[in-house]
Image (tube, rainbow, N blue to C red; front, side, top):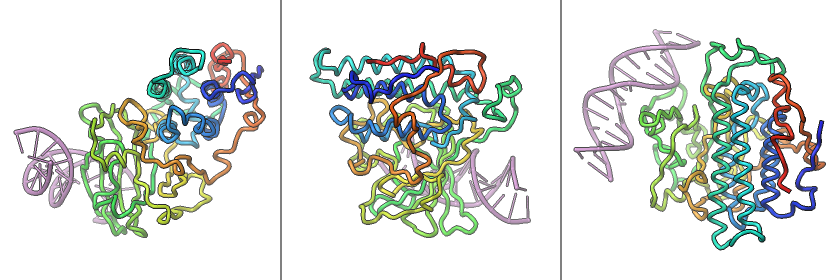
Length: 380
DNA sequence: TATATTTGACCGTT
DNA sequence: AACGGTCAAATATA
């Protein structure tokens, strides 16, 4: 068992980019070992302020929340994607290289920094795309495994067990000016309404939406939107499936759309109030309290569990400029109501991360071993 | 005219 | 049989 120093204890890693790239790697290795994605967030969120000079923490936080899979992702499901692991390593290595470029680009001893901000964003964008590719590769197989610690067997790979699509719900509180009868406005994705039903016992009908790119790109993401019986300003939104489409937004979106490119319009602070049980660990409340998310069907999801959190990711591509982020500074960092979900790993707190150093047979327990020292190296 | 929405019918599941 | 989800023709809108 080898141990390498976390960047926050390395005196040579003082600049934000080194910190980020190193923590990126720490995350890459750690997520292979962790039984919860919560560690991912706990690692990366403290970095957000470091990126103020060239990347709005808003966008990074949005991207993180959009990109990472539902937090309570179990090791169980992670293990089911082991068949694509070499691809994961390749993509993560690519991300490492891009991060390295970013560091070199913005480092004082490197080339000019006149346009460092936009270039930095582009590079980070590529890094995140690498993440996305890696996770998609992981999700490609996703056979069901009966035990998180059981060796992967062929029968697991060819399991005929029916998969269900990833499903998670949000409660979105909207102000009167940002909602209409068809529900909350633009959430960053392009939806086409294909049905509406009166639901037994509900005051308001349920609207059915599918991704506009369903037929052109085969994107199977859908969502259901329904006003809450208790509070008509609250919409219950259930997302099913992930977006596989390449979103293309208008180059000059209307002003109101620019203000709502994030998943939810943000009501004034005085309108905010808790929407759900505050101690239910399956619900996540963002600091605005206007959005609460609950993840369901985290196991055995179709296409794997690595579903991009369907909240849109304006950071990907060149769709959104930094200053278009609708998040105010005070709204960007999620506040998580369960300490268990986002508690720091003690290793991280002490500044050390353990990395196994050998690769043997591929089994569930080998996930962490695959992240050997040969595959992960520090930048400083 | 093209695209988006509405809405009754249809279908699968329970 | 009831219910929820989807389809597709009719209709509305840009």
